[in-house]
Length: 63
Length: 517
Image (cartoon, rainbow over all chains, first blue to last red; front, side, top):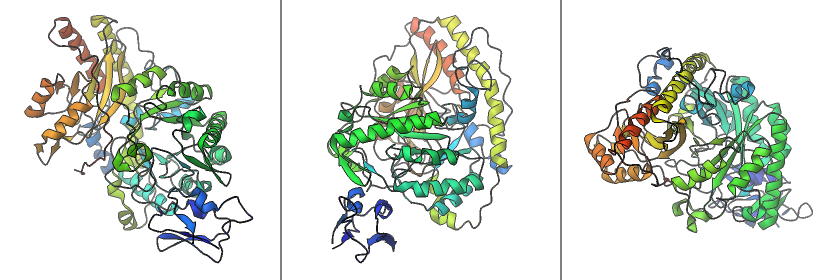
């Protein structure tokens, strides 16, 4: 149960990193990645996964 | 002083000469320029002190001072139909476009390097490429915190869509950011729903009317909170024909009543190649005259700004020029440690201050002369001017990448806009297609003032009914425009020239493909 970032569509804006409540998102080699071990899909925290809600490129999707 | 000598490219003259002593005004004086270097009569001296060296907040200052945007804020919290965050191109100039994102540390180094090279630099702004206050404004405030310590003479400003503004007003005041720009395109959520497909607010994505309503409320609240703290606010509005064009009069009233200092109505930039919703759906931008009609209708509301160049989030230099290529990350990295030294900037600011003192009187004298000989009834005309800055006619026709537009008549000469064009002359020869573009861009003008112009374009302009004028080369724009108007009115009376009233012009929105000279 985790989200992933489609790197080909990512603009590397970092909006997701700032919103993630689990500090699961970080910049690795010029692109943002989600650590599946830390991602909770925001269940129990927010109505919807925060990364997907804020992403301007709609590239945060279920893994 | 070598830095200061290089300023001759701005003045079109040799050394920095002391300002000429201006003749005293013959009679009367124009309401907007009466007074001294203390600033315009209708402006609070404390406010004038804040804006006089800020190219974006003072039309006059934009002829003399340079700004620099640092692209440290790539994240955004709303989606606008005129924006596509995926798009980036170094040959383009419009808001939201940027080539290199910077960390706060890289930004500070770049700012210090640019400040050493460009003594006209007075303002550092953060305008994205996303929203400066999205992602908690972390990079924006980290940059300003360091900058305030490292280069205290530079003014700080930021620009935002306003959604996250209320929660950051205290921090903005704390870092002495005394200029904030808010983009406000509507005060009615019904209109807003056609511009904003969604916003991200309080951990949720909102769409439709709900989104527009929240955004509107946050914008108004943020504006009120800023003006209550004495922070100057400029409101930017994008004019979208058929969506918010007439509505902008209401926006103007709403922002004025909440204390906005300036209202900047900009044309929508729309092109399918930009990949935006509006671009892909054929939404057009306004023509030059459509824009001017709305701007004129808002005059008398919040003070109107017409000199905005809709510049990139990493623009460097005077408005209308971009020297970003000289300061890429690689070049900055290679520079080593850059020290802070404000001597050249101080000298330059003192020079501008002295020059301004003489100008007010000479403009008033020229205007009085027009009123005396032409009368006060004559219809004003538009004049296109090729200039590199310094309020002088100091650019060749073929080298101009934009023309500044002045309206001149018995009421004086005033800057009313600018038109971007492709450079006509490249590598020594003119290009016919480009010339057509220039003609379309200044088609509503009676004359074009240049430092120099070739025989060929000169003839094409004359054939199109636009008079090429090089007899005022290197002189001040406003005084020359008034002298020209006096002569024009006389010729119009004799039936030698025809009025160009009713003509329109095209606002250029495509990619700026101009190569650097």
